Length: 117
Image (tube, rainbow, N blue to C red):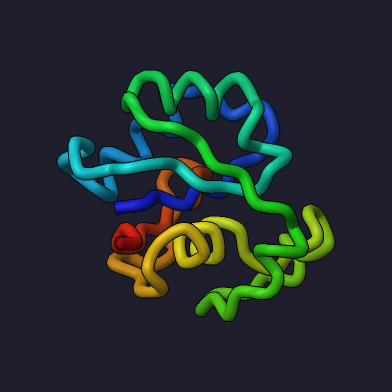
């Protein structure tokens, strides 16, 4: 599974990991975390990836905006330049099929797609 993540700047790793575990349950099946490129290098996201033992992949707002994601937010579009981050990132990195759509846990948006290949 690939896990798309949408977070506000400065979100701590523990909050991200808790949200993922709440949605996914068994984190051993996660192959990577995916998000918008500007969040992929933040300390909280990087630390969450280390805790889960997976890489973080970042996509540009332009790449994410090209994905036909189920949920579209005008506020997210204004803030980061794409109407969806978590679902779009999961769909882009996965095989094009959401296993779990946009789910918000304590302010962290999580979406899960089947892994490609």
